[in-house]
Length: 270
Image (spheres, rainbow, N blue to C red):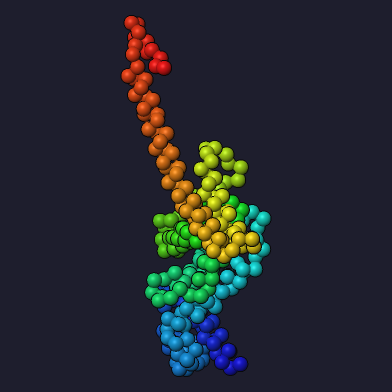
């Protein structure tokens, strides 16, 4: 019990000192004085200073993760992405010191809480894929989403005078989600290839979760085929665009080369 109390005191003291430090750093001596413990206790519980900082991050960031984990999923999985982005940026603005430590390159290893946050995001991307609303594989979409969200949060924290647009986070969020997901009811374009990638991703996501009469090797082969389709869809669309452009150019050249009548009117080429 004394060990648990000492650990909690150390974590709370470190978090308070970090919040008050303009350099976003603390000394172990200051932590010992604030927590009323000796230096050996810190090294015994946390190993070293980086271990202490990682533990503080997990301690504070863990509350945020618990809320994310316990929040009921939305009826539309894409709505969860909007909430995830807004909550992430809000946590950063409310806990700037902890947030900077979470995503600081000085930490040799990503804190467990931040790692779990990313796993939860991949799960939400999986739900989008299962609904046929994702344009990229879930893990790739999660990487792009996280990178953009962290970039916005750190920009708002580090250079608020430059990034002073109050709608900046919403603008980037909306652009990113439009880039990653299929808009419901959007029939613009009308090409079957526009639906090929999200459909392949949807089938792959469902196949990973739903029991089927297929054997394990057959499932793996099916997943490989679906992955090939989903990653090749853009190449197919690009090939079709090139083909259409080439046909249009050839048609223009044929019209320009068509014979003319005495009055200069182009004659129809059969």
